[in-house]
Amino acid sequence: MSGRKPAGLFGLNIFFAWSKTGADGTISIGGVSQDKVRHAVRLQNKYDPDHYVSLDSSGPRISTTTIESPKGITIKTGQKQELTGASTLSIMVEKGNLDIEVMNGDFNVTADNFTFKAPKLKLDSNGKVVTGNVSFDSINSFDVKSPTIRIDANKLLDLSSNNVLRLFGDRTTEIISGICSMQSYSTRTGAPPDLFDNREENKKAPGDNSQEYTGESQYQSVEQYNALSKEEQAAQMNPQYTPPK
Figure (cartoon, rainbow, N blue to C red):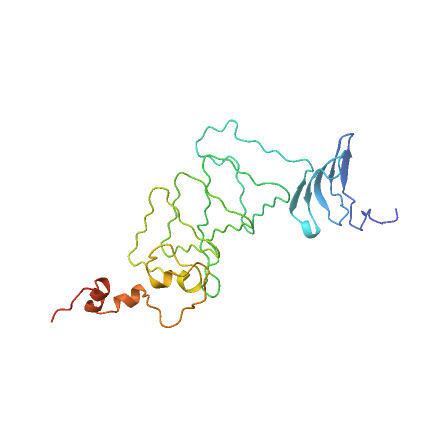
């Protein structure tokens, strides 16, 4: 014997490699793939080389299981599960991310109940919260339809729109607030509002900006109103008010 050890395509030792091939498929142990990665076990469809299950043992995919199925994968379980609330199919990621990418199609989920939770709280070195967030990012639309919708926030609920923000109650609209401050700039920069059209500044035609707003605003915020004296507040609420002597 020359003493040379059997080697694969890229010089990896395949002395103990083993494979068994039939008319329909191949199972191999210790073989080497085309990208210089050794597999511990590989099960492959002989009619389609892209249809396989590989337990890799070297290179960038060491201790990684790769499943490739060109036409699809079906997982069916729980036919005889009789325990209510049991975790029949569980996916647990101890470290790292769980990524699901649908390149050309839809992501559909049908269930009795659908729950998202992000209960873990972690802070970075600056004390900023980096976990416990739920985000939805849509390039076109985000639709929610339900007989009852509740959004509860114990710190801040911020609803904003760069174009139109519409709140519509077909029967009743209720706004309950301890302090409510509302401001409108329509009479300064564009068409007047539909309400209070008896005011002089609202009598100009919509889109007529020939008379720009100048001078100090006559409108007050809640903070400005609360800073007034009792007599000044009463005089604003009732022009006929006469302060006591």
